[in-house]
Length: 454
Image 1 (tube, rainbow, N blue to C red):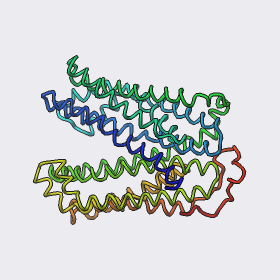
Image 2 (tube, one colour; image 1 turned 45 degrees about the vertical axis):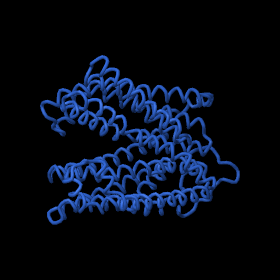
Image 3 (spheres, rainbow, N blue to C red; image 1 turned 180 degrees about the vertical axis):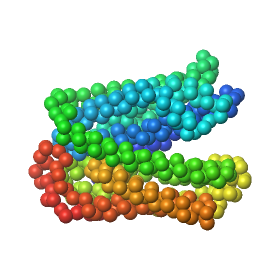
Image 4 (cartoon, rainbow, N blue to C red; image 1 turned 90 degrees about the horizontal axis):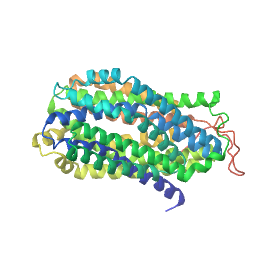
């Protein structure tokens, strides 16, 4: 295996492990409340977790924007700017978290109004929300640290933090619920403790391995107008792009719900196939963020072009492998997830849509990583807007004729269109501006080519 593939796997594999552990936090909570003897607790955890998933997903730009700009500064060997990126990200994350805490009541009211939980579930969901909202500084701070670590070509620390959070969450929640009998409060406090433990351990890892960067003069130009303008522009584009992604996902769920409980269950089960694929592809996207930003910052076009080709080879291999596995064993996997024969049988007519997800979506995942690395965030936004509009248009026009097939066709086109539009934009991307004032090493400087090519 050549060094480029080794670099990709060194960054991708820990990220894949981290991604797989993320849903375990919610799964542990659901398992605990599932043994409390009241279904209202299960509903409360589902509602509360959904609220925070949406809120934190919207602010995911703190991780992505930090990753791309940090890797570029590292590639340009501008270590003072590397430090500034971390401080800016933590400062902005802290400010947003403070606003979330201050405005927690209107946020809670809006989200509960949208979700309409039952009268039995609502008070428990409110209790869960009122406790977990104080984890916002830890979660958003961890976003900044995680993005910074990825930009520094280190995905092992985020992996270890994710594993630690799960262990702490299991131990704390079990202790609070079954020994102190705190019920829903115990689950919420356990989650809160795990969130803060993850943030503090990540901070300790920075002190242990990176505090020597403090010797660089990062205090000057920390809030330089040009640098802050770029920081906010990049994060604004990612924020708006995320809103469109959230809108598509929310509409997909609600459109399925309008077709009845069976179709909702079918769509939920089939979307787990997309979720599994996304966990793996996000790992390669993170590797793309770190390495493409580093090479772009160093103005090393040869290494950058080789990286892009290698990423797409890995993407093609993963898409082929997942398509084969889903085509051969997908039905068995669905039977594993549920013993409801009615749901499994109802899923069969729609199964080929799920099988086509890897091929349709692979380019979008790879390009997302590359675009974040080179901070071509406007291209990400444009592709997401175009794909979302196509998604809504297809479902609106074809739903009366095709029913649930129209929803799945719209989703597949949405995935494919994101990748196609990004491919087009990438072909026009130019090396027009230096991402950092630091000069590159001798022999690694780039001539400014007409286009970036694969």
